[in-house]
Length: 280
Ligand code: SF4
Ligand code: SF4
Image (cartoon, rainbow, N blue to C red; front, side, top):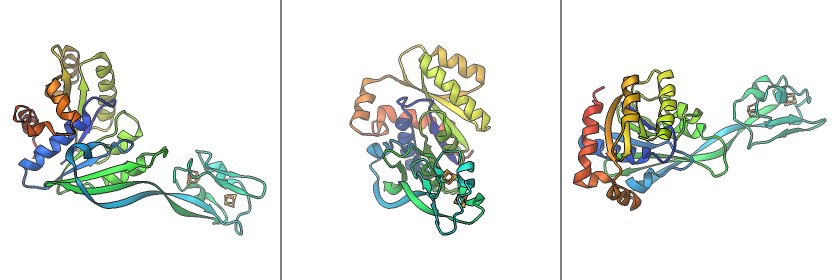
């Protein structure tokens, strides 16, 4: 089962939920459990899980390399590029690798087979263990604009024989779509505020378009959760848990620890696991 943990915006407690959930499931289940940190622009699950990263693999995209001997300067490559990453001057083809999305259109349409592709590294994937929990982390290099290839390589690490917990990038852009591409079930983390509701609605729209089942966890509640309750009733969404805005939880989190190591909080996560029904 592939479980994605997502939220419409950063800072709602997505990684808090994903790391604690992954650890609790790995302690309970006999089958292997994997945590994948897909928040590739700012992965921080490792702070809490402290995996011993031993394996590292680079992520690259193919960028064009033009053979001046074969090029006729016809301009077709520049015409088909949607990202202005290749421009044909009078007697020179200029390639801007930072703008290139590695789509391959220019080499495909070049009538003279003058374009080869060479890999350009944009990030990396690391792997290690946190106890029994297998942990992967995707990381986009600083200044790189395209997280999707790193997320795609990371989803490729999901083993169908495992329970995979995928910590998604925040927001509802193409990064989230890539992160959800192999998910069976989505947990949306939100807060009971007007902003939280607004972002939850956007996330639910995306998840519904992808026809994925989903549930909600309301984090940092301080009393009234009517806003979220009413919306979830209306959309027929199950609320898995409401986690209080508790100063002690914030302190545990700030120390880079897991709250499931504290008996008064571990029950919250055991209850969530029961409600998810890991047998599908
Ligand atoms: S399409 Fe091929 S031949 Fe035409 S300008 Fe581009 S690289 Fe040169
Ligand atoms: S690979 Fe795609 S994005 Fe990159 S230069 Fe060629 S057409 Fe443009």
